[in-house]
Length: 286
Ligand SMILES: [Zn+2]
Image (cartoon, rainbow, N blue to C red; front, side, top):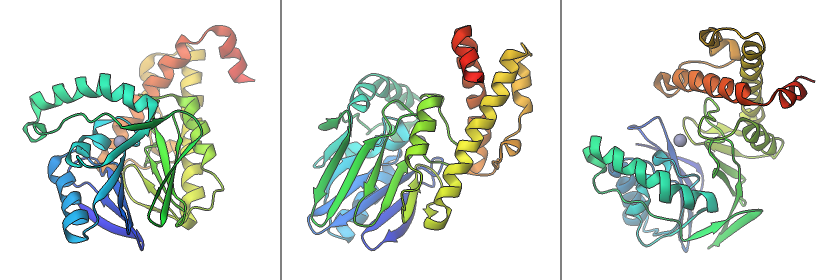
């Protein structure tokens, strides 16, 4: 696991075991707020050890940015923390999260100690603020990657934990394409100092707008392509003709995983456009 400091009191932990997924810690004199918890116990325990034993900063709150395993499995290693999430995250952890963990434990021995922890505090609309010590972390709903995704802003430092609303390739197969566009647009022109992506490298101030724009542009290009295939009744394999590079993205990040995400995005969008009634379909084109 890699550790970096993005502000005096803010650390980012990046997994070396799964898809460069990130977690972050905001330190205060009253304890720490941990944003996501990684997937493998070895790394989650290393975060706890660093914060609680080395820095003597006990974790008071754990924020789950969404229910996916790579962001929530480590939560059970912080039994004294209050767990905070969106209301949909509670429902999804209780259903899909439990089923997914059971299946994962069958195939992956390292996960045997993992337990689903349901959030203690949830919100549905607007903004939830957590005040601890000298820090304020603001949370709001940011669906698209998943129905329950949120983002977290450390107000005093203007550091945004964007979770999977911002990653090297937008991925909406478990979420919704239109919501994703809206959530990305909501992040524009906000003057963030740093943006911590849910996977991959931290985005610095000067690059934030460009990165958001590139993700919006990717989403527009794949929509146009999928729409042409649906309208032209072309064979479904034609979907794969659109390379990731032709959408302005590289296939290198996340050890090449983005290529799989790209193909899954195309397929999901095609299925969605195909299932829309003809009238709605026409209105998209105008
Ligand atoms: Zn993720």
